[in-house]
Length: 187
Image (cartoon, rainbow, N blue to C red; front, side, top):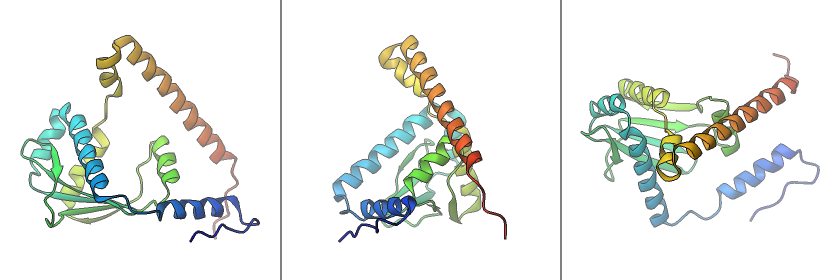
């Protein structure tokens, strides 16, 4: 049972307690986890489909399995001969394990907005890790291109510009807040 933090507790610890409570809620049903993982694979393949060099690099890793973990969430991805991804068969050993060590979704979102990669613990094949790192650094989802298919080029561009400006403003606000926060002296 969830016990709320005392009223005198600092706001960050209250938020941490709330985060822990939410993360400990009932485990989603297996069918939902399965469907979300299928959608993640479809999305990743959609992004990879427009990147010939990425698919060529991934095709060289065919059959290799990457296990990605964050908190209680995990997925096993396998490179296909076409340079795309599929879910690895159950029981197939991972060649590479990537564990995202930032546990707070808020920290992950803040770091993503600042353009920073999350902290990751890596185990396994170094060459495969280098290929995954290259993919993360060089493959980007062209949101405007996808929007233009539904809305046309003009509205898609306008949405892209507006979102870009909003993200830039948010990044500058985060940077200003960080600069205004006093830093603890080094010990």
